[in-house]
Length: 540
Image (cartoon, rainbow, N blue to C red):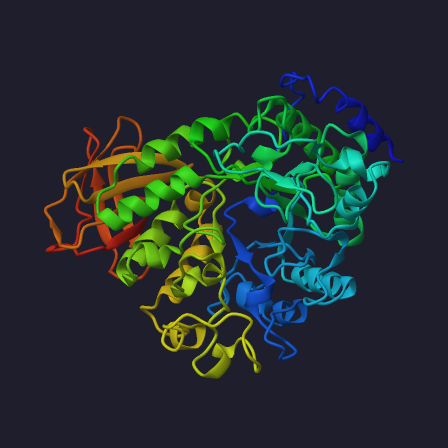
């Protein structure tokens, strides 16, 4: 056993009674790859099918890597994403993979461990980091560990799960969490479903196994980090079933162990909660977490046409954490796709994309979001096959799709949108490349601006002398005579040359007065409905 693992286990021995421990130093500085980065979430089952069986696989994903990033920073056909987050790729009896039956084996429908290693090598050649979903809260009820625990009360795996002679109370959301054993008169705890029994992290062997699994994926499979599923529920302590002190202790030690195995490995957690709760998972537990509250406020602002408190939430995070440590999104595999939330309005989707990709943080884009894929509950309809081209199989497979494509797949797809200057896909490609290439967008400080029109959201990103100005009309009618002002010192007074980074309008002059008012940038006669300007400013 490696020394870091022994230390991690020893430090975790007091989980059952511990309060949050005094923290060691915060995580080291930003990994170089995170500068201006955008990550891309992929469901392997739905991305591309290489063998025609209707199920996406690792060979198919490898074949499509150039679409995600071809390694050319000036590419017009690649998104330019810096990392890929893969939804679960471990063996599982379900289609989604969030109930793991074998943590050391790739799901056979996706390929072999060797196929995964070849995929990682191909991604590396293109400069893409690979994060895999790590499901530690629970296993599959088909997992051999749980089957052994059910079959024999003397099994060493018995203590890996929570059993009781009578059912306990409801779970953290008031729903059922205790399930009757199929073997004897007893109950076991599974916060999500009876098919997903929770692991018991008070047991040293469970904690050691979590570290062993991390070692395997970092060393043998060569991944660059993990997205950790449902981390709020890892450790239950008495009446506490969510956000318990032991969970914070375990995450701190888990991240410490991961960094000892692969310095700089990136770990991002799922804490689907308010910003206040999210901030309790810092300063030095996992590297980063998704910002679901920001996603809600951004989508709501664009859908309703009013900025609301979007910038206030970004500013709170900016003043608390470096941007690589929080992850804005528009949607993911668990919620209604953003295009459906926006009622299929492509203009609104373009505004949402522009805001996501010009505001701070390290954003994640859900596969298909860049072409405007739709999808709503139930869950399989959120995760339908990637729409590559018109025709049978939508360019995803030559066989029968594991899940039928969306009804609009014949008109909303990569082939149709590629090369179209006004398409959503073209905008995503341009914005992702701009974010990485433009210092103010990559690392710049967010400076809120004040507009005279209630539908207009305005802000600047500033890094050194570089400034990018963003002015977005969220309304569905033109905004005429808009005046925008900055706070004192946010933008130095003077005259600037303004260059439209999205190429929609010719360059122009712009002035910042001593009072902070910006003049000369608004096109005549007005900002169009749901139009966004992204301007690079250079002092004259």
